[in-house]
Amino acid sequence: MSPVRAELEAALERSHPGSRLVTLPGDASTRRFHRLFLASGGTLIVMDYERPFEGETDDVRLARIFLRASLPVAAVVEVLPAAGCLLLEDFGDQTLESALATAAGEPEREALRYAAVELAAEIASRGTEALGSSDRAEGPALDRERFLFEMRFFVENYVGRLLGRPSPPPALVDALERLAEECATHPRVLCHRDYHSRNLMVRRDGTLAMVDIQDARWGPDTYDIASLLRDAYVDIEEREVGDLFEGYRRLGWEPPDQQSFEQRFRLVSGQRMIKALGTFGYQIAVLGRERYRSAIPRTVARIRELLPQSSRTSELGARLEEAKAL
Image (cartoon, rainbow, N blue to C red; front, side, top):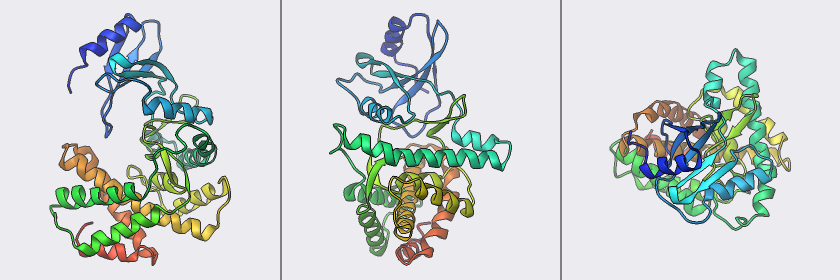
């Protein structure tokens, strides 16, 4: 791990004399994170951009939108643009992933999962209203171009680089592009965009809070719930997926038609998991981060189970199998 930048250490010593900095384990983010132990007691999280910046970053803008909607994200305590960092509220180290793994029993796990479902519904309701009335109302979206990019990223990095099949059949590429185009037509809400158990923190009072919000944007109304219920990092029985999804539908800002909502959920779930495989392929094959490999078998098994269930996705499932892309 590279040492902490001297200019960052110097800036933190000026703003918080006598504090101590500990670098936190990295993830897929392009940022680095540290915990700052204050001389007066207490801690803050340092989000390190590794270079100076000017003006407001997306992290600051989005935190303001989430907090305006009373959604639990880390407050920005201090902005140090010349040092290239933000100082954020510290939620501790317990993720939803770790809390589920150490829960005393199934009732506790069910309560944690349902709390995450409730929070997803609040993002889609209160968060959508806040985003729509903000200066980012015309901002970025998970649109056709973005979804097409993600499908091509899967082909390049998972199929090509990780599996060693750089020339997939055109029929597979066409099927992936049709999935991307259809997902882009769904009704839009505010999406966290990476809403899973490693980005949900369990605070000391047992409530959940979100981190890694810098990519939040408009997206399909089932995107965050698909990210949660098809989480690559935890096991969840299909029966419970159905129960929790129905809970999300009933918590919705406008209870949508059940059949069409379920169809959108299946389509977005497929897209989201294929996109995740592209990310895992890039992290492993390009960046050498082997810790993502353990998430692949679970994701592949879910894709193989999900896609044949609907006439809208069965052809894509067949194309993936024919191309040995799973």
